[in-house]
Length: 303
Image (cartoon, rainbow, N blue to C red):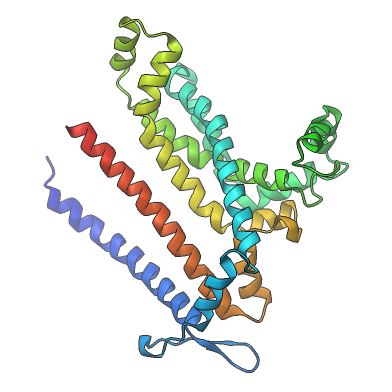
């Protein structure tokens, strides 16, 4: 058996490499967000913590609170991500469960189909959907022909029949499409590791198939669900390219679009960096909550 210290030595260089560049990038963002700007509105980073200016950070906090300029965008972003995560769970869980329990010899094909999207650039896949969902696109014609646009209008989640005309539903569906494989794969791994004898025992004790799933399979797959949720939620919160392509309307903009507007095309790059800091802190709290939940689950499993 290979000694544990060998694996620690082998893992140390890549971990140091990743940590170093993460810390350098993070410190650069903090230095810009805590810095000043020139008369031409170019950022002047303050690398010395003693010289940090909290003005832009305070302004970013005010903007993201109720009544601030960024508050509607922040609420919209949270709503989009929550709905996209719920749809990913509804769509992805049956796929992962089928692949882990019933796929049999076709399991490799199912997994290959899940991995295939990664062979194509995310940008190119979204570009393809802009063509399909255009007014004369095949997908748009099919959806409108089936009356999906009418149903969406009645539900109040869509206005008109132009799927690329600043529709929130299009942005949410695009987020689900883009990140769904990241949810399914860790969930599949969790379901595949389940001890099938526990499921058989629940059936032997008189549980129906639904009760066996609800009381045995679903609780045991909680770690996979949480891992998948974290994997898709973190990039969704910072995503800006999906909204740009699928809508481009300010009525569907997300927090990532606001940051990109500050940094790329605006004159308030320091404010954009400060807003990035706030988003990072929010995601860190989200991540810490996930780790705490996993630790509690591990303790419960060992007791």
